[in-house]
Length: 102
Image (tube, rainbow, N blue to C red):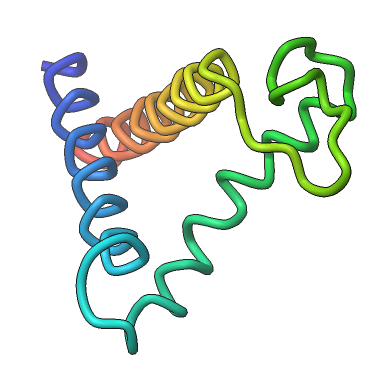
């Protein structure tokens, strides 16, 4: 039951993020600014990891005239990192809820 609860919370967290962040890509322009506040830290964390020394996250290894875009590996890295962080948050929340029910 504990694992199923973690998975349910994880699905809820990911669905809530997608719903809140979707106006940044689709939807009315008036809501785009607010949802961009949720999308920007996720995308800008790529540059933090690049600065910490994780290789091949940016195109041309970060040697651009201005902001380099993420490489395919960089996008995959962000996806795995943030989904892992969401899974850990869901796991911790399910443990707290399980202790509270006892």
